[in-house]
Amino acid sequence: MLYFERGIVEQAVKLLKRILEKDPHDVEVLNDIGVICCSTGRKKEGKDYLKNAILIKPDYEEAALNLADQEIGDGNIDAAVSVLSEFLKISPDNVRIKEILASFNSGV
Image (tube, rainbow, N blue to C red):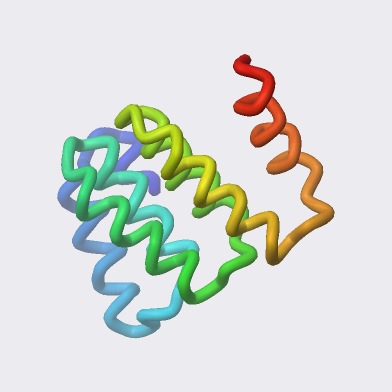
């Protein structure tokens, strides 16, 4: 993510995609590409990478939170709640996700 942090976005994506070629199940790389794509206006592509990370590792909290955050940013509150609710089915003791969902239910 150093390239991304320095604003060299395309190099970051190219590097991460090369890593994915070697290990297409690397959920951290899928998550990172998803975040970069979403941050640079390629939201559909970014969300697809985040969804793939979650499909591979359904209990990957960071990807679930990033996808939910993107859905919230796009005004898709129901989709965000759905993502987090699905995550909670797999990790029912996750306090952080419970608190976020509770904030939606309380209207915060």
